[in-house]
Length: 130
Ligand code: THU
Image (cartoon, rainbow, N blue to C red; front, side):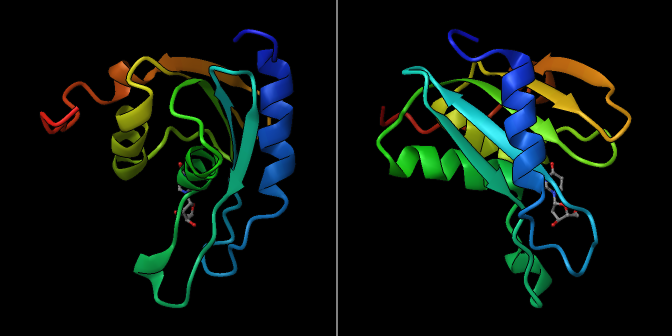
């Protein structure tokens, strides 16, 4: 992933998970996304008493990057106590900006794994306006 190693990106995701606001699930997730320019944006899950308002770590990281002007991303690192891949909503959001993105993940046991977005979401929704 260019200038930032997978190990570094996973470490940023692990640190971000410590900032999770997850009093309802107790499941703290951290994400770190690498832009094409080499910038890293981190995110954690932010839960809400109105459960449906909860946002996942992946979308927080992605939206932080987009809000800072980045439009293309190469890699996403995900850290959670148990191995997880991004949910369907996050995959759709990632597809908007990074249909080719690599996703790496690690859990508490240190197990690492990698897949491509296109392996996880075979038919994203796109509008023909781009
Ligand atoms: N969560 C994430 O942040 N990312 C994932 O990939 C899976 C789920 C969060 C949402 C919620 O706060 C908690 O984990 C339990 O679902």
